[in-house]
Image (cartoon, rainbow, N blue to C red; front, side, top):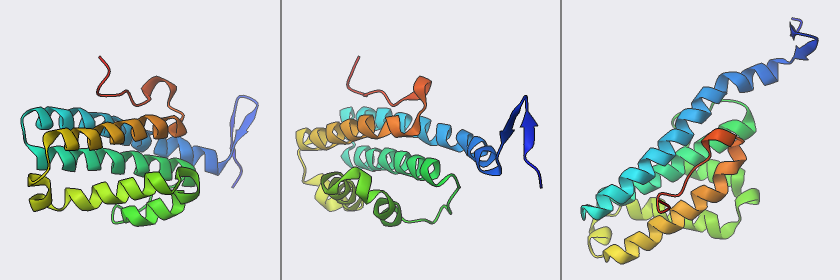
Length: 152
């Protein structure tokens, strides 16, 4: 099958696929932003567990978007966070990986969260916010980069 012509340029099957997945990448990036905004809202309402779950979900969305962007293919919805982290480990560094895994674990431990002080949870959310700021440029979405939920 020949590549389609666009003007005088050829578009490969791989770049066409990347274009198809761009919508998914945009949705995941937008979801990460919205989850973080909701996370801060629920923290202010003293719903700590929900806040942490949403913060964790924001990181997962961003990681899925980066993974799709780099692989230029969709992956199954059942792909585990650990699998994605393993694929991205060389680029992210051990500190970021450990933080993401810890946050993921903590978000599943409601009794542990209930013992946390809101200020400690705020520190985790701020750290996640900072990590999202560092990860977002990897999506190359100039007009839709992640914006800190703590900047007004």
